[in-house]
Image 1 (cartoon, rainbow over the protein chains, first blue to last red):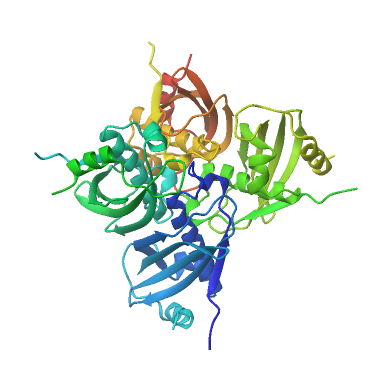
Image 2: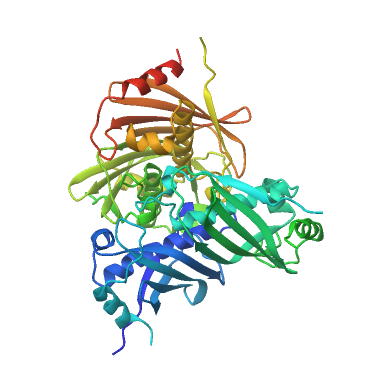
Length: 137
Length: 137
Length: 137
Length: 137
């Protein structure tokens, strides 16, 4: 069985573009966070509930590389894939394109924590199974 | 001769702290960018002029790792060091502490571009010399 | 003839919600700006082109009033209406609701400027006509 | 007795300036919020403690007017004054200048709430007294 990867589209806001005419670097992490929210919804959860009751994730590492710029109101398509599934942590990879141009790729390492705390805990089994199904082969 | 490393202090704004009670991840890149501005001023330039006339930098890669959180209005001290000096690119390393706790370290790779363009160009000699003086041994 | 008012939906990002559990106040102006972009697209223009070539707007005044909060990932519906059309300036009113709750209303006064400058100029006739058509009676 | 008004200085970040070359409008509310934090510190409290234990404020209305722009890294001086003191609410006025130019004035109406809630409550007497001392005659 193959699953189409999840893709979230962002239109950069005027406020997010700097004097170089490109999305300011920090906003890519916010775009990836928004894509993450929609990705967990696509996996079957209501993010506004699940993230505070059933599980929570804290970021411990990000690696972001740019291949080109994105400008105001372009269609930035962000593909989200779980590229590593550990016991208490996982990596999500975000590949961003504008049309057929690669613009920005992020790999973000999350640690599973008990909601409301900063204490790491095993990724809940049900969530883990759903992530495994959509992980690239 | 030894040079004291440059340190810039940031007080996280209420707007920058999320429901987990910690600075939202993306804002660390904005903090590093603010520290970068002050670092180039410390090197002897007026950032609002030099960055548009004499040289400009575009970010091509960031690696950020968190060891702990920072909260609203804490004193975040960010030490900035040039840890790699290439011909057309350089790395700045940002080490952040709150008191004696390490909280967040970023390594950012910049490419020198002709101001007003996205075209890479050798780092101007004068700037390069000043960076070399403050680079860690 | 009646025209249905234009409505833009925003889902507040995790990054936009503060420790009080509500969207931080400043982000409402960014939401209204995003709604403004989509409103001008709905009027028939490509915002990424029209705003820099055919006309441009600078904000001179905002009045924002809150009646209730919006939280992470709620469906915030923002209705946009031109509520005043002057010669060189106009007001857009943004009424935000979550379900049947009023949450935030903004009235923003824009001055028409020659693109690339801060010099005020009459609102171009074609744009003015299209705004007049959708203005509330 | 006269008291010098409190002034907080902000240097706009590169990330806060848009393609028009000026601070994007929403960031002014964040600047005013930062100035508010420092103003309450100047009144004698530790903002990171007092705001969550002794009192808390929610914004119900803002009026912001611009007279001119501020650009990257300019010295924006923000004078903060309590211009209205009600029983459960107050207005702070923020007057921003760059050199001798007026750039932006905000009047923000806050409601006093029980910390951790959205329930309005009388402004604590001690805080009220300290605000009254620095209110303009």
